[in-house]
Amino acid sequence: MSDATEHGATERPDRRNIEDKLPRGIWVRVLVYVFAGHALAAFLYLLFSVGGGQ
Image (cartoon, rainbow, N blue to C red; front, side, top):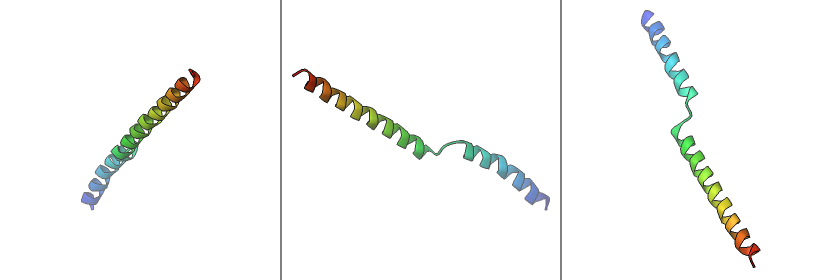
């Protein structure tokens, strides 16, 4: 019984650390979306700047 108590005590901090950190896939997705959003905004800015010059 003491083994189960010790094992349970060691699981909780590990689980808490995992829950506090975001998974790596989410960070990659966020970076891709930010990059794609800025690329789209730059393309639209380029279109409006070229179209406004004529």
